[in-house]
Length: 596
Image (tube, rainbow, N blue to C red; front, side):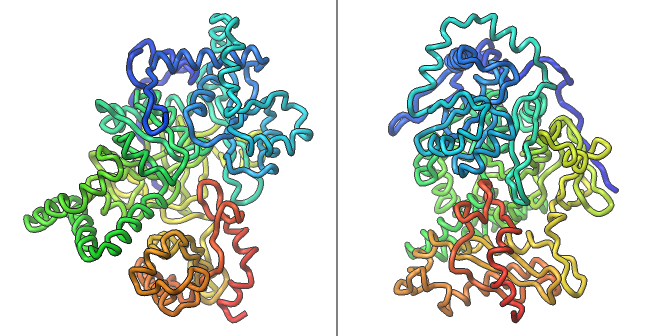
């Protein structure tokens, strides 16, 4: 059994809640730009003082509407400024905001609002309103439904004008860092989502200490970030709190189709994303270079970036490599950085393993990806790589106030300021997950000699072949998804004589790849049966197999007709694979891989 921990940087305290943050920042630096809000083709700045005033006005509106201390209010919207405004206003009013993914079905909306006991919900537009109205008669506690696009934030703020400041102060006087701040529902990969209760201290203490730990990222002059991940996800929610805590200028973007334009105009200094976003950036750049007849230049630039980053880890960068890197910096890397706004120095990656290839590539082009690890139950991050002491391929050491333990069976266990209170109304699940003060994550990992954590698999997803070989599918799946033609995949073989895979093709990347490889006449619908496409997928499989032993390698694969998507029910909103659903829906295809 191996353990490591990082002590708190700031002294532990029970004082202060998330609802106090806006006023605290306004008192400290009232004129500082706290947010930039999309306005047409540009951005409108919102100062700390203005944000605090808007939070107070909306909080009073919730009070006037009858929202009490401890009342639950749902928020269902795309990522936008009003989401963050409502979050902090509910905290300022002593209420408990509960996020709902804006893509959730009426059944999921009903479960979250009903299980949490919500008395109100703030939705974005007509589509979200329709989802709520379909189930509203089965939610007797739901007294209020507000719609952002109907101007209800302004109406609430107006209606609360007569609420006294002392009323808000009195509401927060009875709260401290142990008080419930939010309930975030898990992705539901193995059944009904569980409501994870997180306290004000879970967010606030972790954010304050994280800000000190990575101060060069979030406390540098002019630090800014563009938030585009769903705020219903704990990762984005923590960054929202971290940004307000550290004084980071933050913007919101909700349309991935305009994301690169938003990067160019907002010009963030750091971003956060899941690995699939970084894979898309790399694959799109590669495809664009190949289409312009510069495929060899990009390949050379990519290889040089990776070699340069690896040489940094080795301690010496040879002169020839430094010269090649300088040339490609002018020809290629600067353009890639400019596409992200030109000022990005750091990115934070979480949600799934990044892979060493992408980690070295991005550091080599001048954007260091700080890979981290955490779960909803740990208020997002438990570990993160340090800007001045990165170990690519790991998820870094524990954050301040966090303890890590590797159990005898390899399971990662976590204890600390970030660990949740309990699963709402589910004591059995709580007692199963938290034992002797340690949260058992279900993930498998190992600690290196410096106390950096490496994720090696998921306990419940370990495949055991008929020959008794234990196989962690994530290693193979991550390598496969890195190929531009591959959208999603699932590695199978539990109880079978060998390992195999189901693969889906990336419809967005296919036209460019087809044009670059002489397949313009082959429509996407027929691509999976084309021998040249199958040969390319075999190359991707062969590359993935280099990461494992022969007994763990993929022997056969099948390309499916359709993709795994959130809409099809095969991915969670955070793009995690619902393995049980995939295995149920594609059982015949799996059986066919083994001869029926």
